[in-house]
Image (cartoon, rainbow, N blue to C red; front, side, top):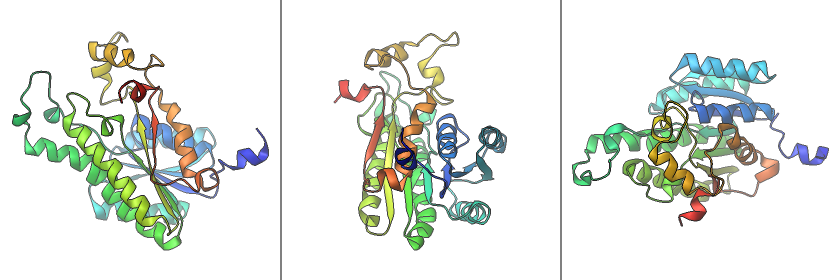
Length: 273
């Protein structure tokens, strides 16, 4: 690759925040951003995992810090934003990777949708929409707009594009994530802030590993069904999200890209829609 092409993905002038960088997928994206030269701040509630990810980045020659933050608390996010800016410089890249499902919002086969509790529904929407996109975009978008520079990358899901069975609240919340992503992209397009989404396919992580894989590494029944609908016939690896997040973060590489949803799923969606 030529030096000109390499410079397309040079993030050495950027400070990136990864909310949810303490998780498997968020952490892998944080490492990819750091490898491209960005100064990376990992925000989350688990200090032990956050510091462990910082150490991995620093071991590989990157610059990183951890700061405790609650994505559902506006004041907590503001305090983290200001602390990161003071230490690493103004934030120009935001990856909103906080989110997840809740057992009470999952409907096993044959269960009654009418019995789904409002509390469980609200919990999932809070995790994925309010804390996953809304509050981070407001807090970090405020300073990005003031500088007329920023790339916001929301982590959505294939479930936001197709109503997967069982995870009804999660699917609906991720559909809302995609809609809000496009709204913000339109609103901020002339103000120097791009807003896009990445929709991962099936990547075994903390929250879904038991659903997809048995303790011995074999696939569960649901895992077998998913693999059967995935043209690449395997699950994704966390590091395979790195290319998409670095591309969207880079003004040189994707400066005319906003309002888009980049699907990284091994072809699953192509067999479904």
